Length: 191
Image (cartoon, rainbow, N blue to C red; front, side, top):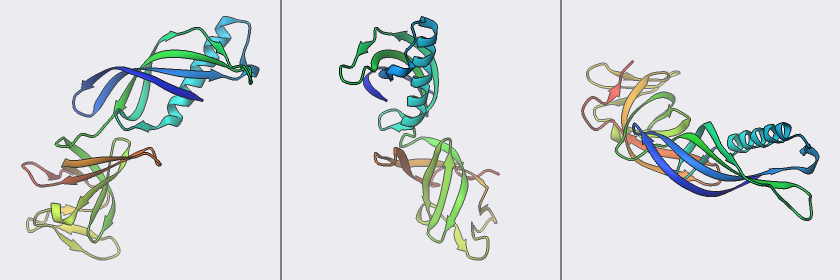
């Protein structure tokens, strides 16, 4: 269990990767406490990694990819009723966030009559509407696809370069959704 305390800094690498310094409170259950400091530090780091993996994503930071450095483990505070100990932990991590206007590449994983869904990094809910695919027509069948006059195909497994129009964070799912377009130079299927 954890609580987020503060996001002290945000540094952007490229467009979609962020390096962040965070402070979270990590709770170590009483049965996991050990008199030896080394075992306690290990328990705190393991719990931080578990909390980090469970968190998945946050609106302002995007998807959590990797915890890079534990900067500081503060003094623990005992919780009165449970005997558990809460430790403030400062750490650095790398996240992935999609921004409107950004050019990205994704793999088509679902074809619908009115558009396609793509995967890019950890994001799987990237929607490309047929209205944002100029000159592409839907071709139905057992393995449907979109094709344009130049015989370029958008089908399952194809890598597509696109521009992000908008993104939305869904708190209940701890997931992002994005709407994208092929309107622009050098956008479209690249494989």
